[in-house]
Length: 351
Image (tube, rainbow, N blue to C red; front, side, top):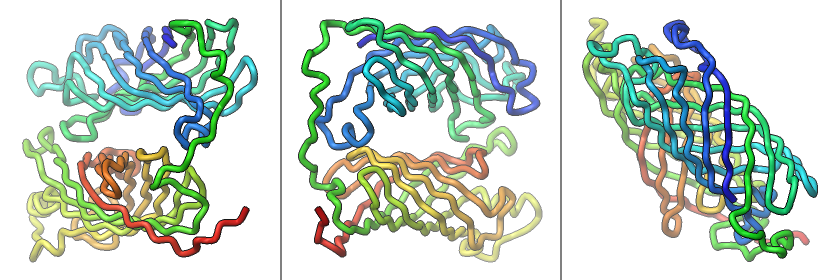
């Protein structure tokens, strides 16, 4: 299916410095969508969602300092309620965004929002869809589009655009008459089959924290982490996490405040966290909500949060991208690899 969406909204001013950019403006989006029918187990578990790829554009009110924005991102459109001709859906998309203008200390010092051309683009929508014929579907809803570089380049207040939307979508060819005949596939080797299991993830990641706006420097961050999960359904795993982080900026900040660390052990930050994993076959999202147990530099607070996109690329090896935050403020983006151990402690399955 092809979908064209028109939007109208505003830039949410979540920092005082962004008040000057408040205005109402349009946005436009073109998407290619595909209906799922149960080829993979996760499609069945999540109610046969739509999957697709979108291109999004907005002039952002015409301000020269922030310019315009374009984003390209894959998405999944989950049905929260679904009838024969109508549905209420939640759509999630994550991809790459490009902003034509960004902060420069001399040439564009009024742009306090973003410090780079390229950013992560996130999209959240709640929408109502109504099929008006075998070929056409109308929809309307509200959405949030977010641009951020995860503090890889400061400033990084980010842009949050809230919009109301109206769209029309059409099949590019006559739809398959057997599309409604959903199937339930065989389990893939790493998928949950009802056994009592524990999964233990261990990995390492690294990233850069940009503090050039304040100090003219960038600092490396390395983290070793582990999560112990109990899988409770096809969708969900709950567990606990333990990690150890070395942030080179902590040593610099201590020296800047005329304080010192006797050794690097005082800079290390061990942490414990509550962990949740949302599973989509080989891809999953991991959420950690934790607290640092030690570390001499704690100017950002003891609490931390981490959102990880995890991908099992061969056997039990995985790659991931993690956004580390302190109460919603982006700290750094880490890129890593790891290994997932699977332990079955009860093989008997009740029927």
